Amino acid sequence: MIIGTIGRHAIARLRAAAHLCAVLWSILRQAARPRHWPRTTRAVFARQLLFTGVEALPFVSLVAFLTGISVVVQAQVWLSKAGQSELLGGVLVAVIIREVAPLLVNFIVIGRSGAAMAVELATMKVLGEIGVMDSQGLDPLLYLAIPRTLAMALSVFCLTIWFSIVSFASGYLFGIISGAGAADPVAFLNAVLKGVHPADVYNLLAKTLVPGLFTAGICIIEGLSVRYSITEVPQAATRAVVRSIAALFIISAVVSVLTYI
Amino acid sequence: MNGKEPILEFADVTIASARLGHAGMRCVNQRFLPGTLTLIRAEEGSEHVPIAGMAEGLLPLEEGRVLCMGEVWTAMPPERALQRRARIGRVFDGCGWISNLSVEENVALSQRHHTGRPAAQILAEAESLARAFGLSEVPKIRPALVPHQDLRRAEWVRAFLGSPLLILLEYPMRGVPPGHLPRLIAAVREACARKAAVLWLTDSDRVERHAELPPASRYAMRGAALAAVENG
Image 1 (cartoon, each protein chain N blue to C red):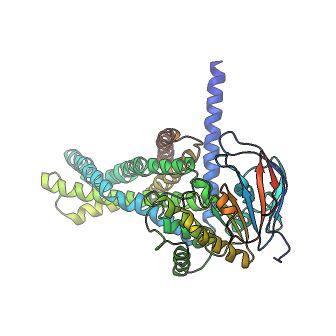
Image 2: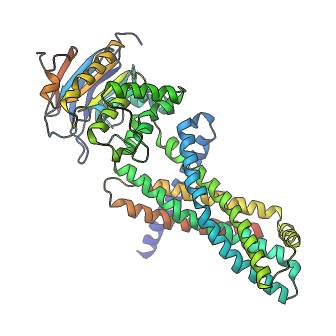
Image 3: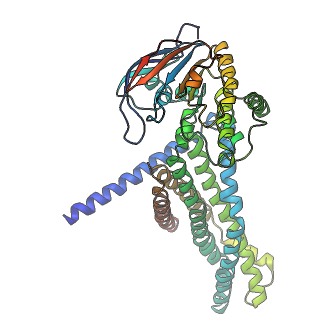
């Protein structure tokens, strides 16, 4: 009986994952066709970029600034004490670019935009606004899902790059102020750039674009899964956030393992 | 499409009553020819009559088929179905707006999505229709902030924008002062003159008896059936 319950649960999860992958595949396939980008869809894409990417910049910058202080300064201090300062670039790239920046930016985007997207779509569904679109010949997949999904993935990627730049800059500056780091900015920059390998670029792309796509897909599916009542909206938002975070950790773990193999 | 082919046709259509959605309809046979007005009377306070949703191929039928411009909705490729719906104007019974767009964006949405017309041209036509319906302009704010009667008339603007082939009016006078009725009737006359088919669902005697109403096929909902009503 217990095994049966676990099995049913596992099958349900696998089905949900397969459904999510099918939705994302459909979105990406449809998005590749230029005729699916009329001016209205482009406007939704621009609006989503503004909300998820541009408007998140101040908060992402603050988190990156504080992360830079704690991580970069610690790395500078401990590597210097161990007499391994030449490893600074590699360590910073491994910690900030490979792990911390993508993870924190994805967290911020899930909490800030993913939840909002799920609530927005769920409310639209309950209020009958999806039906209004249908009746005007607007396919919700083309008008709602494609621009939101791509804008979210692109935003996560750009915000992660911005996060890395700000955290390195703040770490470097705080290192100078505290006397923990070298004063030569060129040497610091060189150390970081030398630590970047092609695998880090693939890792960064995989840990930003893929979770961004999955977050959007999950939030869209959960948002549009509500049926009749406004009380279903917060439940859908909670499910969207929890499942997005779970997907983020799974994707991050898989990509990390693949990067180091 | 020639003047004798129906724009819309219901062939033995039966739709089940949805528990939370709408009334059922049974064995509906009806053709909507270009340039004609069809008036359907529903009792005030009755359940939502799903005829507009049926006409747009949006509701699952129990039996029968609905043809739009000669093609059955369910047999149409999805993209063609979207293009056909773009040629239909509708005033909704209930929610008719996307709340995170302004009324102006809502009104122009279908035209901006489906056509390559310049935005300025679409908005100029919308403003012209708005003035014809007694609005000073198409509201530039969100629907939630617009008074109900203005919002209803903005729905009229959207329904007639872009010269649609089929116009579905679900209780368009609800919440609108009767003084505006002649403006709507004038727009209906114009639409019929350019060979559009108009389906007008009403629960008001005032509409049915208006002297300026163009000749119309008249029907009434009798339970789940659509019954012809004598003119006059």
